[in-house]
Length: 215
Image (cartoon, rainbow, N blue to C red; front, side, top):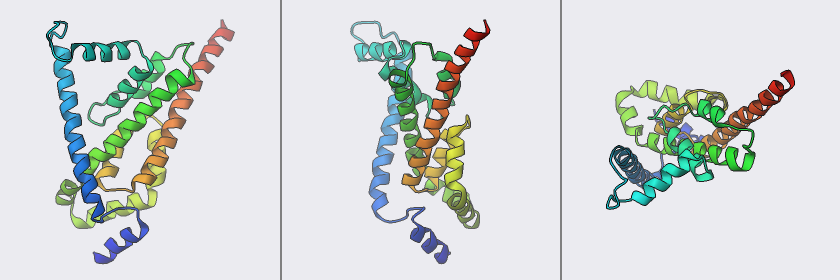
């Protein structure tokens, strides 16, 4: 078992050094605040916040306005929360259905992709908090076997999971739970996300052009 630990540390694919403990503490606190923020958000949406004395009325109205009008910030908010692993929001389908002929790369594709990337980073961070639980539930032999598979095939799996419509948010959380190297994760996740949404963006305008020529 010690040889396996040394091997992973030497390859720097998985991180077990003491410096990560402080980072994990910060991530745990951030995750806690994020969950509280989402919970209060749903609570506010169900309550009558039209009253003048309702707390954060103007803020909530502005957020809803941004989302409904699909502004730059609204697209970031939508794709970020929709990309969290526990919400199961069809990001790719929604992106394709809200595209219009006036959509362009700077005001539509960029903010949406930015939100998805931020969501994947958050999923990874939340997964870090599940590491101890995984080590308790999964037998040590199987645990290190799974880490070995991620070590060998992780890069390809990250790219594939993010460049085609698959449950990549859940996979990102799993990578965090197994403490997969963050730099490798984010590099190929971003590459896959850019490929996916650029392809959807280009496909939409190709179909529009095809329909115009057809009719």
